[in-house]
Picture (spheres, rainbow, N blue to C red):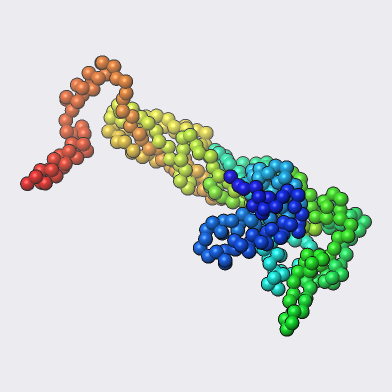
Length: 376
């Protein structure tokens, strides 16, 4: 179970941006992998701290977390579980923004604050039948979209962002310290080069709002477990009109009642009676194409014997070829015998010869020779 983000950073729920940033920087320096080489616990803690700060520093994600907790980012939320943040704007960006000032580095943001939106992840589970035939699925995606009130600028309608007077729009400022000149992120515009004096009331200056969208996803026939489908530009909207991230659909197949899959081939274990195995017979099996196929069993069929049904497996993705279906025989030993059945089997045992059970006869004969060799 994930720890509470506020507890992870050691702040209260009313903490402002300055408190969050200060707490994060202190803990990140304490648990940084460079200061704790080989310490897996410190590395895990470092990642937890980054995840907590990444969520709480974003007003929309923080509002969703305050309302729904970690469930806001699971199975269709913005973040982990059903969706996952990715691309730019992640933990590496946070660390660089905060520690870049100390190192005299950090990236320069000269695009007016237009940052690419995060990539999102959606987990989808489908049946083997759906993977066989393919399908078009409708999914509902709660994500950030461009604010229609300000067209993504973040500024109140009728106004525009203005150039930052501190850095003259460069997003960076220089400070002289003795013989050295240090460049750091502009403290006024936070590296964006522009300032929004009158933020849009609908998006609070973010240029994007949270809304649920309905998307159509094409699942091709023959798709395999673990396949990733990318929907370009369907991820989180960029900050202040920046380009949108991508949406990644991760597919998993539900276990099937009868079939196991191995690539394009299918396997089905079929139990048959001891008498059918001995005397021969036939049975019908249903296949994923909606038909039934007859399987003939020759007399003397042994347990685990496989029969191949050519072309009755899975489609090969984006190819006209088909896999095969393998029927594996499982011989069932009779149970709950009545008196008459037992007498018949005992009579069969009395009249049986070594030719009826060559494997068992040969095995015990070799075992006898083995022990006699040891005793000599």
